[in-house]
Every structure is written in C-alpha cells, then in structure tokens.
Length: 242
Image (cartoon, rainbow, N blue to C red; front, side, top):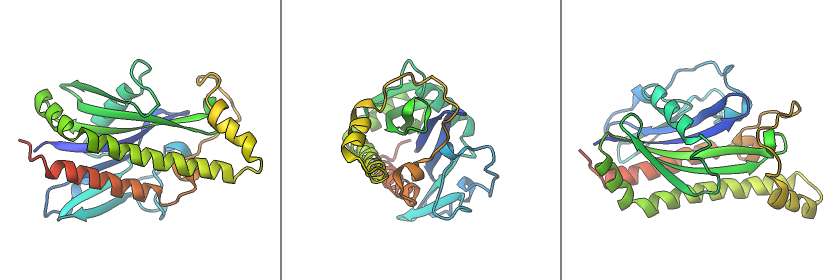
C-alpha cells in the first residue's frame, strides 16, 4: 500500500510557499515515532506560516484510529523535499486558483496531487488577502492506480476538504465582524472589496497573522489534525493498494 499525505500550505508574504501542517500515517500497531519531529526552534518561521497548537511547546500531534497512528507536524522529516517541491508547483500562477475548485497534477517525482485553494481577507496582508491550499498527495509512481483510488473516493475527499474550508471561512467571517462595530460597512468590505488591488504590491505596514489569529480558534489545528486523520483513515482503509 502506498502512502497518502494531507498538507495545508500557505503563500507567505515573507517566505513564499510554505507548508503549515502535514498529516501522515504510520504502520498499524506502531507508535509512529519516526514521523514525530523534535522540539525545533521556530525563529525561521514567521507568524503567518507557523503551526500553532493550544500548547505552544507542542510540535507534533498524534491520534490513533483502529490502532493506526496519525501524526500532524509542521513539516515532514521523511518527505521534506518532496512536499516543498509539491507546494511550489501548487502555488505557481499557471495552476493555482483560490475559489475552492480542485485541480490535479501528476508526475513521476511528485506522484498524484489534488489541490484545493482558498483565500481569506486580511487587511494586514499584502493585497489584503492570505492564500492557502489543502493538498492530498498519493506518493506513488503508478498513475493508473492513483487515479483509480482518487476517482473512487472523489466525492468523499472533495466533500471533506470543502467542509473544512467552509468552517475556516465561516469562523473567519465571524471573527472579522466581531472585531468591527459597523457591520454593514465591513460586510461590504469582506464581500466586495476584499481582494481588489494588486496582490504583488508591497506594503511595509503589513504584518503576519496565522490561521489561529484569523479565526480566533485556538483549537483550529487540532480540528484540522482530527479531520485529516479521519479522511486518511477512511480512504486508506478502503484501499489496500499494492
């Protein structure tokens, strides 16, 4: 059976394409110790691309479903270069869109990748928006087997990503309106003017904010970890692929 990985990536104003979280599984009956990451320094991460669990010292999150360990970390210690190559391709201007529409790419190096992009309004970001995407990676060199698995679970996978993105957008909208007194004016800003202007235009007054801050949900990455683990377990449990 080949591996399936779910990543959440962000186009950081400062660093460009960066991985925020990676959810992977280990072999059934093990603890998945090889997927855990050490207590690494976070100075190289800015606020907008930092994985933030409720306990600031937490670097890895692990859960078990039917004795299979699922682990979420800031980066993958065993697939670091692979995933960085994938997100650079995903965020290229030729392919990426941010309206929740999926796109797929495959090659022998990066395997099969399903990408769904979305964006959130933030007046503190360049172009007043922060750009993200969820990526499901099937780490296989077999195009036919990978596409067969994806087609059999298309509605489930797309529906799962859509629900998570809808949750993020809804609580972000609630947080945005909660910070402002003039609801009507800010609804107009959020719905109509949020993404007007050049995304590439620099603004020195901008600063980084991560998803926890944008949604005011300190458990957001715990929810993403659990949801991704459920998606992975369901797909992998029904596909004992060679």
